[in-house]
Amino acid sequence: MSEPTITLYTRQTPNGIKISITLEELNLPYKTYNIDAPNHEQNSPWFLEINPNGRIPAITDGDIRVFESGSTMQYLVERYDPEYRISPYAIQRYQDETRRLYGVLDKHLQSASTPYLVGNKCTIADIATWPWVTLARWSLGGEHHPKSPLDEFPSLKAWEERMFGREGVERGRQVPEVHQREMLRDPVRMEAFEQKGREFYERMAREKVEAEKEAEKGDE
Ligand SMILES: N[C@@H](CCC(=O)N[C@@H](CS)C(=O)NCC(=O)O)C(=O)O
Figure 1 (cartoon, protein in one colour):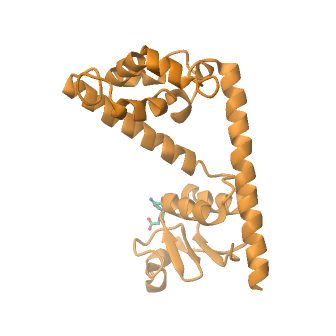
Figure 2: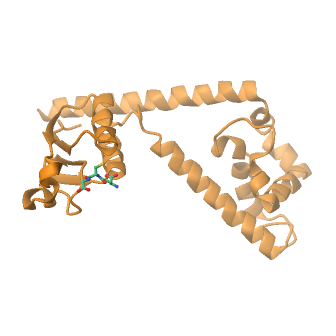
C-alpha cells in the first residue's frame, strides 16, 4: 500500500467529522485545512477545483480529488482498509446482490407458474440453483430468525421445499458429508460456522497485507 498524502478540507460539522473520524480509525496521516465558510471560501476558485459543488468535506490524496462525505468514506476504505476493519462494504454488497437474484428467481417462478425453473420437470437448471438458494440463511446474513429468510420470496421458498422433497436431492445433498441445510436452522451451530468463516477471511486478509508489504520491500 502506498503512503497516503491526504489533505482534508473541512469544518466542524457532522459531515466534516465523518471523514476525520474515518481517517483516525484507519490510522492514516493527513493534513487539515479549515475552510473559512463564513467568508465563503468553499466557493473560491481554488476550492471549486477540488469540489465543484462548493461544499465540505472534500479530500485530496496526491492527484486524486474526492468529495461527498459518503463517497469519500467509501474511497478511503476501498483504498486503505484491505482488512475490512471498518468496512462493511464487501459483505453488504454480496448480500444485496444475493437478495436481488433471489428476487429475480421468485418473480420468474411466479410469472411462469411452473413448479420448476424451466417447465414442469426438475432440470439441471434447478439442480445448479438449489444448493445456493437452500443456503439463504447464510448468504443473506442477518439474524438467525426462526422464520425462513425466504419468506419474502414465496414462490422461491415453495420451489426450494419442492426440490428438498425429492429423493435424488436428499441423497445427493449429503455427499461427501452431512449437508448444511439443517445446520443453518440451528443458531448455535450457525454461530460456530460463521466464526470459522470469519477467522478464515481474516487470515486471508492478513496474508494479503503481508504479501503486499513483502512486495513493497522488494521494490525498494
Ligand atoms: N451531501 C454532502 C453535504 C455537504 C454539505 O452540505 N456540507 C456543508 C457543511 S456540513 C457545507 O459545506 N456548507 C457550506 C455551504 O452551504 O456553502 C456531503 O455529504 O458531503
